[in-house]
Length: 475
Image (cartoon, rainbow, N blue to C red; front, side, top):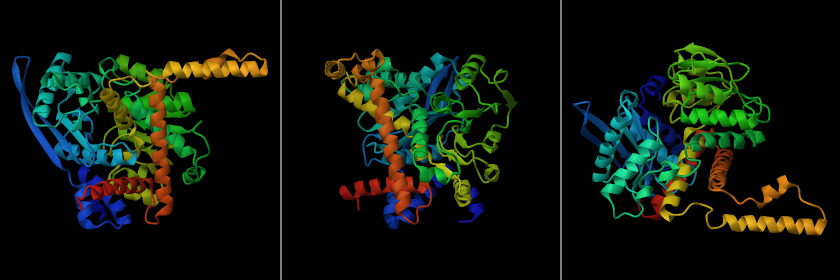
């Protein structure tokens, strides 16, 4: 494929071509490859809502890429630029993402063509409930077959509205709470879901830095401490990932960018303070702990840094700016931030990329935990936490009896504390991210044709999906 052809690829085609590289490495039969890449179903809905005395018609989509596992899983985004191609591409990414991290879901995605900033809270509730009604009526939202989650432009609030709407439409379904994930904790959500994607990005980087051979390829020194990080996209994912890397791993976040501008401090930003300032003032301009530059948010992608984290929207690094990207390694916190053409160039240059289908899977991993929690109708740890605490106390008492010395209070507290639900969520998320990276590393080491982590991730996903199709007799 020529560079000119690569430039003209749509988002969905770009995802398909990335999958093609893995399928070629596996010598997969063309008909099987087509079956795996095909989007199973797409629905477009148009519905009227009366707002401020005027009827407005909204367009929305829900795509189901694969049902080799059920339910199909994927977020719903609200944006003024969403379209069917984007929704289909994101649904395909969800299929591969779930397989990479061993979450037993198929892939789905939804989008509503709307700018939330133009509507009041009660108006967004009317729009969301009406959209939910359309999806439920047409069989594209249910705890058993299709489970949405938050995405760009949506959050806990929208998920609560969707769950409540489904409940009223299906009062006999005792598992109604599992129809969406990412809900408020008070309405069936799970602790740790809001920051899950950002936390997953942190765990992915931590695991990468635990592999000396992997780190050697970047030319970076051991340890995340002091690494210069640039974050493009300062929403939920970018904020949490940057916050954890700064506060817990000692990274130096030298720049954060959003749609309006870039905040820079070569000595490192106080991420929490910058985010609080942005929330309060609706802008990062004027923040005393850094230099603000209006517009040109893509300039952040071209800054000299150790780790570049695109956490905004797709197609941010393309054939036009890829040659100006100076980062030693890139971790994709957003979906599809690097186009296929740019990805090809970066791979040839030897830039290490931790791919989106793995790096930002933390959200769907914790969504899986929330879905299980909703189906089981019990909080994780409820039945064994006190038992674990009693065992810990017995161990400390036995230790004191044997040694004749008193155990320090700090140690006693640590060993006698049972795991909270949040502890268990973090444990499951950490295990999932570490195991998936180790699988990628092994695949990249064992298959000669696999020369980068993205292809390794897709190889692992496609192997699992193909095996599932084979087991049920699809081919």
